[in-house]
Image (cartoon, rainbow, N blue to C red; front, side, top):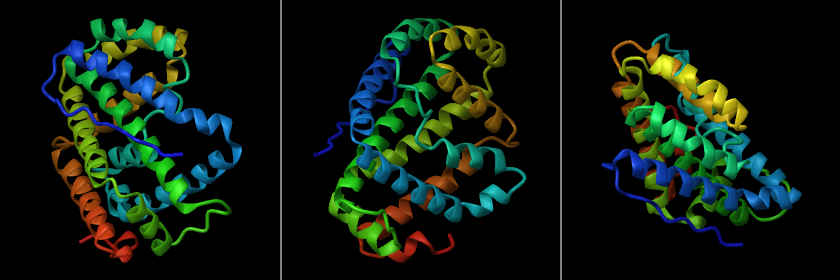
Length: 250
């Protein structure tokens, strides 16, 4: 199976466009995740890939996890990098709750959700392609095996977009923490989100708000560190330097 993904590139969009993007990306995520539900072998290999990637991220950014200032934000990114786990299970419920989100949350809040859902869909697509490239059988991953599959998949523009979305998501979350009354707005959203089956999505927003709100001095430095490291690793992999996956960051 060939996984494809076409990015949406306009970042200076009004709230209506964020809403439309959110709905489109939820549909895309649901379609991409269908194979996870239908193919147990594929789902198992995908879980193995994601576990390995999670360990790699924790190793690369271990200093941020150990930092008093950056720990909460680092933990949030490294545990929820792919977005809320089940945000795309109930598309009809999502469609009912999006108008409430658009009416309640500021642009930064809706942008946060839109970027998170797009990141979720793009990561799902890229991970599916990696599972295909790695082939059948046990997921015995090493730096060299992972790097070879990474280059076989290619899709450098999508990899770049994936990292761009990390930066956009971090920026949106940072803006969210500076919005007056956003804490109250998130509380207002909690019950409707739970009723609609979107507790995971609501929890994602609340955890992100709390993690970034606890970071003194804003998120710009944290986001720039993460993005610079991930760009360097991606470039190294495409150039054949698989050791970048396990080397300590500069």
